[in-house]
Amino acid sequence: MITIDWANFTPWSALAGGALIGLAASLLVICNGRIAGISGVIGSLLDGVREGRGERALFVLGVLLAPLWWGLVTLLPRIEFQTGWLGLLVAGLLVGIGTRYGSGCTSGHGVCGLSRLSARSLVATLAFMASGFATVHVIRHLLGA
Amino acid sequence: MRKLIAFFAGLIFGIGLLLAGMANPAKVLGFLDLAGAWDPSLALVMGGAIAVALLPFAWARRQSRSLLGAPMQLPQKRELDRRLILGSLVFGIGWGIAGICPGPGVAILLTGHWQAMLFVAAMLAGMLLFTALERQRNH
Image (cartoon, rainbow over all chains, first blue to last red; front, side):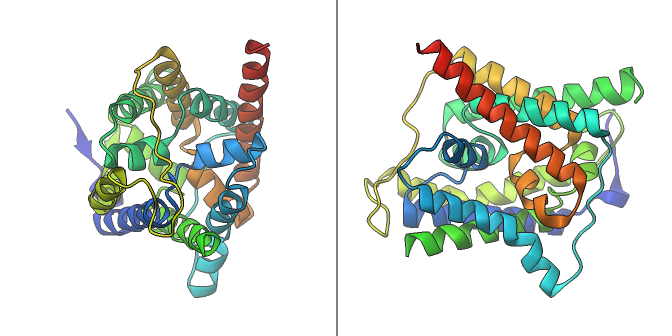
C-alpha cells in the first residue's frame, strides 16, 4: 500500500517547473533542431565534437547560471543532500557512465524522447525509473541506511 | 540567434528544474521511495514537461529544418539494444543513491554546495571513462 506524503506534495510548482522544462526543450528543437538532453550535450562537449559546440556550451551555461539569476530575484529553494561523499562519488560515476551507454537521461529520454513518442526512450525511462525505485528501496528499507 | 536561443533555453530549463523541486536531492529521493511516505510531485514535473513539448515535437518530427534553418537533428536509432537498457539501469542506480540526475547536477553546481561539485566531477569522470572504453573497443 502506498502512503502519500501530503506535507511535501507540491503539485503546482511541480507542474509549473515541468512546463518551463517542456518550454525550454520545445524552444531548442523548434528553433535549433536540437534535443535538450543534458547528458548528451555535456558528453559531446567532453568528447570535443566540433559541430554545434558553441550552442551546446551556451545551453549548459544557461543551466549553470539559473540559480544565480534566481538568487537575484528571490531566495533559492531548499537543496538538501542525504548522501555522504562516498555515495556521491559512486552515484556520479554511475550516472556519468550509465547515461552515456544508455544515450540519455531524464531530460533526453524522459522529456524529449517521450514527447516525440520514441520507443527507445520509453524503454530507457522505464529502466532508469525501475532501478531508481529499486535502489532507494534497497538503501532505505533493506539496508536501513 | 541560435546561440542566443540555446542560452535562454538553458536558463529556462534550469529555472524550471529549481522551481519543480528536481534540484533538491531530498525531494527526488522522496519521489523514488515508494515504500516510505511517497511524494508524487516529480511525476507531475515530467507530465507537465511532456504536455507542453508534445505538439512542438510532433511539428519538429515532420520538418527537415528548424525554424531558424538548422538541420533537424533527431535521433534515428530504433533498436532496443542491450546498451540502452543496461546503461539506463546503471544510471537509475546512481540516481537512486544520491537523488541527482545530470540536469539538476549542473543546475545546482554554482550554489556553493561541495556535494554538487563532487557529484558533477564524478559524473564527468564517468562520461570520460565511457569515451575511453569506447575508443579502446573500436581499436
